[in-house]
Image (cartoon, rainbow over all chains, first blue to last red; front, side):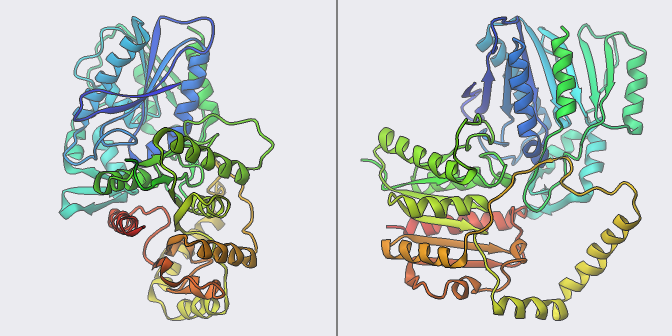
Length: 250
Length: 255
């Protein structure tokens, strides 16, 4: 495991690279896209565990923090989801360069899935997208977090479970949708969900009509955006194992 | 010329080095940017990005061992020989124990650390139950509906069913903490202590700390704060900004 900073000097990003931890090194990198705020905190251990497990299968894995989150530079003032998508692309290039591989997979959890799915242009090396409990649309997410949002900074931002989301970010989210373009794609998409909702059942329908799409339900804990009095974290081992198995079957 | 001391920000509970609501990052960056004091954040083994260790030490012993390893590393790499430790919750207790064992620690900042109920605690507790409007509001609009909902819900589960939790050692006796604080005062260690409203099961009035440890003559070595409306993880950005500012000011005054 190697921690390092990358990206532009104004918005340097923090990354952790897990090289293959086995004799068999694959020609494929896996980029892990984390969710926002409290969900990022709650999922850190799970995403690290996922990265370690994938590296044991021979994958090159990169975890990173978006600008203004975690160990990356700055705060979120004025930041937009589109800038976080630029960070995803920047991290993709970094992974391909560091690992010297030609294929790329992206795993996104919650908002990380939405951001990865709606990149303006997908990396050419993309082979697989894995969406774990994806946020279906930016508007859905805003509706979900709305009751938790407390206006701060003179009303130009909201605090959501202790993490500030500026209005610029919220405005940019409104236009994002998991399957904005349902055209045929030349990479595979795996939807791994921990529970049943109407929205996830719609996804299942979309998947059933498309050979590149795969839908998996694995009942697991999923209260990502929950905060208790001591800052507990979530540890849904079963669903992590399902994702590892998906990659293991390749 | 090396810095006069370095600040070490400790993990709290199972939260990785970013800290609840990014508090640890904000403290570290503020202290380093505004005061020029080097700050180190790290993960204990088995937390965040640090691998677990095979060891015969228990969690508390290992935490102290690792804090000392970090101090030794900084001393060797940056020629800094003095340290200030900051911790919240379990981190506050780790800071205290490390300080008792290592004279390189010249000051500690503890948020929601050891607390022991005393007579005045109970007076305050029952007075609040009767006269504090907020308590009645909480009871009527939060506790009671939650209790009723749990009573009638077949699917109700305890909140930590799906969580990664850690077992904690019980508090040491008050007498032992008194003895350790006395020793640290004799050594000239300086303290910043903050208790939040979340610690209400153990701490519920302004100067309870001085009553709990009345045998210790803290003199001007201590800065004590009590914020009843602040929660343990500092999820309100204003509470967080206030803590960061106070810590920065306290550190700037350290000798």
